[in-house]
Length: 511
Image (cartoon, rainbow, N blue to C red; front, side):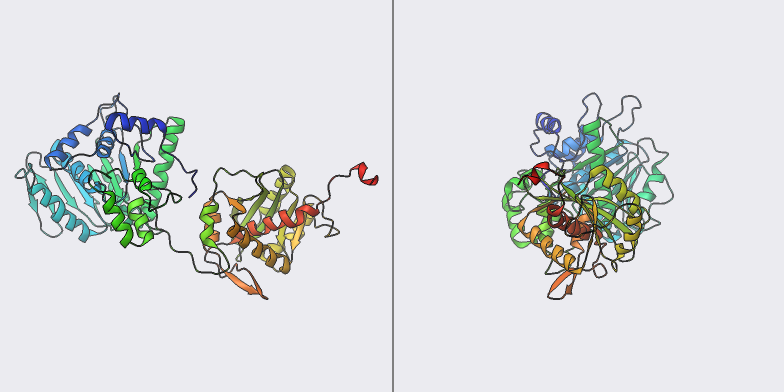
């Protein structure tokens, strides 16, 4: 990710420092609303009785998560998401939330889920029950360990906590007051949430909590929750809209070096409390770098891009600039996937600093929309050229339709006019692919970190063409058309652009 990623709002940073002495606030998180009463201190008292010293970040999360709506007296947040690196105290806050629920209300039903039922039972037996037995709350509950009926039952309230597995039948049936999805990175779908939420619909004070460090590309549930939580928090701070979801996320963007203590201090709120820099340094030395990033920097561990010696994929993340804007001198390109399922329109434009901005303008299913879109963009943007691969390529079938719509190839290819359709032959494409690889290596291009474009680059594969190579639409692991389009557009901008005849100047006849 680029350095322009969302930053912690100044107001949140200031509030966390003033109210909690928290110098490592979340990158995404809601503010504490002082006009709202909160049960946060009560949960903190429970944690204290369990033997835990509540850290500043935990008190902040508890105070916000347990705010009470002054109009209804109910929890302001029905869902709480906690995305935080390992070894920061996630398990202790989860246990505090669970035990508080058992103690605070009568006949509550709590369900806890981890990666699977086996891991949920291990946490239940070795962490939850063991901590309770050794705490000041010992003797106030009883434990049932019958397989399939494992429960902690609070004697005073008759509230009970059970465990479940990540299956389609999990937690269906009875009402649910508190659902906890721990280690959310291990869940590849939302079946647990789909079971929990309907069971909570008739419970006024119900909450759903999920918690996890970073996951992988397969962590569909977690990645979706993080994306949605970020959107909600950004809307809260920019538009003032408070959602019913409280999302707390500590995270270090990819451009922050993993081996710097400053990076750790920016995303590990327990550093200096329960974990030391020496411990983190030791784990860095012995762990796989990608796994360290996932566990301690809360980054998503991405599948390594397929090996292809021709495309310098490792350079791509460093070329991202989400704030980059195209200049007025630009070229367009049309690309179509090998199966004609998708079409992409890409722009390449010169920036004032001499670098080339490439951006996916549009990507939609099929090809029926392309000609009309190009006619419109040609009128609006006045490109120096519009590039397309020649007949025989997937996009080549659009050439006749483009010609009929007035987007024509130049009568003299050596004297193109502004907005002409440039039909690229095999040698042109070979040249464009080699130039794009050089541009990535030399950092003379910039992209805006678009998901579809990055996916096309990371999945790109090549095939030989004489002594050189070209991008291979069929062998690539993703739809490579956005990247191919960027390659063609860049070539058209830099190679064809200078040939475009400038408007007639009368002085030309003098000299």
